[in-house]
Image (cartoon, rainbow, N blue to C red):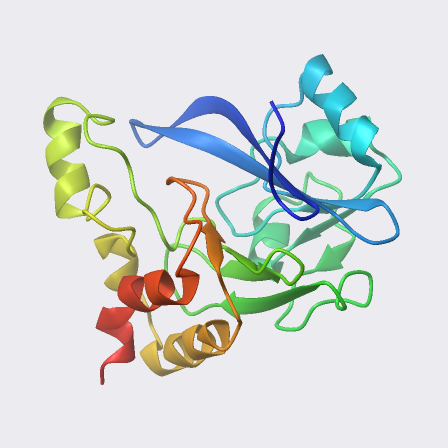
Length: 230
């Protein structure tokens, strides 16, 4: 259920999903803007209990699919909140034309949330294009799949071996090896990460990993150390 993480920001844990034979937990983030509109990031399955908690916070107006991989439950939210706008990167809009997309996520935030949330597109990756967000009031950077960290024992058997090789179970949160290997333009990715590091980040939230509650800039720099060094 919804848990407050910081000033005007909440998280919710959704059901575990299977992707390519691996089980992944799901996490949703909700930000309440100053006008009481809700910014719903990577929505999870919408239960009656979750909907009641969401509605008690404010009006759902922005449904965010933050990369080309996190879109599984968007249709449920579009049905439940038809007045909300749905946002996605162009590649996801092409991948899921069955969903009703209103706006493209770009390298600058739209006026609806620009005074409270910043964003940077990290593109040029063969697996996914991801938009990283920064919630100014709580000083929280929000990553989807580019930074991951699973607790020991989450994966079993041969999957645990693959996960270790992919750095999913590294001691500190980091960029999985498969993403490191699939950037077509590292200079562009490096520029995006440098913009992210210019944020005054204290906390970091990701879709797959424990929340980081302090030294957020240091955590991001560690995760991308392999990219930042030339």
